[in-house]
Length: 515
Image 1 (cartoon, rainbow, N blue to C red):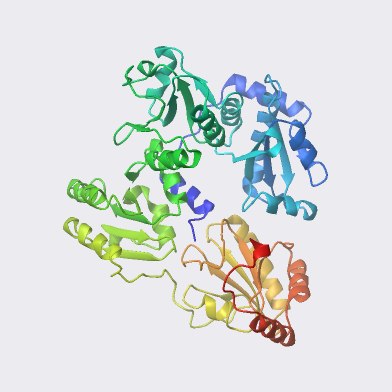
Image 2 (image 1 turned 90 degrees about the vertical axis):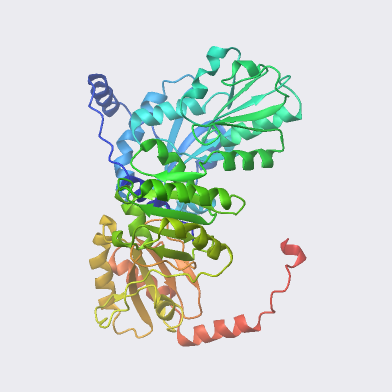
């Protein structure tokens, strides 16, 4: 299971504390004006969604839930941004969908909404859909969206047009003999697809670029970055190959996890990747740091051909990562690998000279994975049963019961509000011997791959036959009880489902009509 969005946010939130900017007089005036104006954010629902997407060539849509605290915080900023952007030429439209409304849930499913709020940019009647990756305050939303309208790639006609390429960010520039042909078309197609992530430019004058050369062999794509080799080129204009080139080249060989906010875009990309991840955590301010850094960077070069991404993290900045992976500071210096199947391998109190050998053992398949789990509780007499990683399969999948399980975080406000409601529902259902309501601290236990936990609280309902559904019902005790009674399987139903499943032919190869 990939690291969830909520944990990616926590990892970065704990890495740096950003001070809020001082309020400006003009901002206060704008806020007052926005409060007095009619609502500028369009309200969409299942009946008018497609028409709105078709009508507006560019529209930002927020999928929200009324009970979501983050959505409530975003609402006034989103409205203020919508009012400011309504005066832009052309107008930039912001909209919202209550994804918790039963009639809108198919929309949320169609557009893969896995947490709230989720914001997506729809272009060209919905033919191009991208995740919104910008700020969550009005001024930042406005500036981000202004850059998203207009051409996806800007022409560089003179050296002064290219000065932005040295601003310490990642930029992609296509260098052509003329602005036509397959290579140029493919470049613009990719620029449109990735414009939310990168700035694109194009030129026929390579000498206008920093470190440019008029004699460069064109066409080519040049990626500028503030790390490693600073500039890398590709001459493969296949769209898929170009996208892979940009993805591989736009992350440092070793991502640094510290308090520098300039590193946060690379950290986001690192943790969102499905590739195996190697992480070295230690104290950056102590004497051995340089020897560890040297040994680690040497190991990165030695294993550069392997499918693994590398990170070095400062203990002080990495508390979110320590919580997520169930680590303790007294284990550092430590090296950890999480593979693409979410198995984890750990070497605590590692020495600089052991790093290469330990990594080699991992690549040779000689290491044993570890699982993060709290102890199985000796007493478990409360109405809501406590589950941990070491017994979740026994309780949820092997107990022969209907199980509603909550994945929660101790610090989550919504989880705290839900706790007494689950207690009440569990108490009501105590006489139902075939029903269990359970909870697991997803910050202290590994979440099995059968469950997709992208935020807290996340609830699943699992029947004795193994049917597993994400619980999207009401959040009152009565609604939870009614849902369980309506959807639970009896012993006879479970047996029939098991018999039907056993009678199904073994899956050897896909049927032709399913291809």
